[in-house]
Image 1: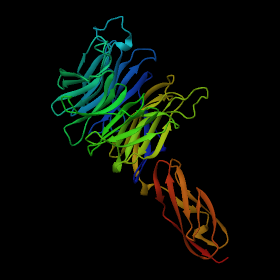
Image 2 (image 1 turned 90 degrees about the vertical axis):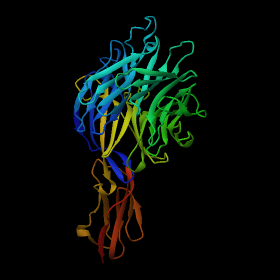
Image 3 (image 1 turned 180 degrees about the vertical axis):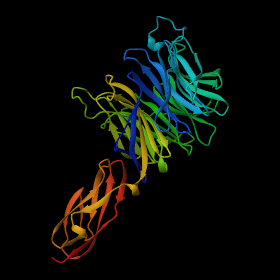
Image 4 (image 1 turned 30 degrees about the vertical axis):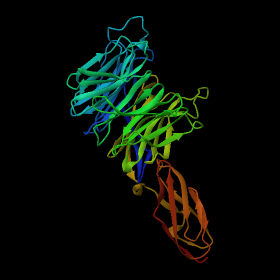
Length: 479
């Protein structure tokens, strides 16, 4: 794994500026695509997804563990001879649990196409060594996928996904309860009305319930479940047109449920209360870049961070229609977009996970690796961001007046010294004589002698929208 440092800045949190401290491609000359990530109390980062020797080869499940300093502690490629993909992770104590879909079972009819041959797949790995403790596969002879899993306090796993066990019925959402010690399937439930699926399940803080998102009859839904998978309430988003899907789920510390994804021809996020009522929605209009929210989390001082992708507005090379770019945004607690950033190259590059840390933020994305000896290929891209309080941003007002003294009637030049990694969107000047100006570098003439306090207020691109700098005190003498 190759690390390098950059001073580019990305994130804003209220009273903070998150600097892009380090980034790394995690992978090999092969293709690795991350789909999920979790971080444990010790600061280790676990990334899951799948690996392919070439774009046309069958995928294998892929897991990697990164130490708090960013070094790879172990990698694992569980799976069999068929296509295997890891879709979700959960961790507790010394064990990392994963779920996905496996095409290596022997019960599949050979005349079925590969995309309709898969089994539910769940496993457990020792966090410190990467040793596979157990894995289990089960399902029908058709399509079965475990898309999400969640730990319960009762030493069980709540696993959600989809099944095509009855071809005449169609795709159905599925819920399974497994024993954490060995993966034994204790109970199975099916969502009912087809087509449907269960995409993500997460515990709701302060309650005994679990938030669940998915799709039912081509419309997204949010539900609250108990540890046995029984539905407490369900809210179907009837007012959003097809195609709509919820991809991101984050139950907040206050017990509310934050979801995001694609809403018809728009994209955005919604907040629901514990009764399943929509408190607010933030939708981004179709005339802007089309994209999707794939993960949500909460950061310093209650702000929301959204990760996903958007179509590139300026494709490169020009003959391309524009691939997907990694998208990152900070939002207010009420969903107001404070800033956003899309970045990437001419290939499809997608943000998959965002994790808040005590020191800042971690972004995990699928990004084209053009820094290895192998041909360009997608790898897991991990970016560590560090929080810097706004009052510690290294900026200061400067002038060409020698010793801060000058005679009245002469033109003085003022600018803000801001390190190259920082980007100012707006600089507002107050010269202390009743006049003001706007711009990164300005000129001003003081007509009367006296003492003046020159104040600059910055609005930075990805944070600290109103940052007053310490004033310059000038003495203006007679001509």
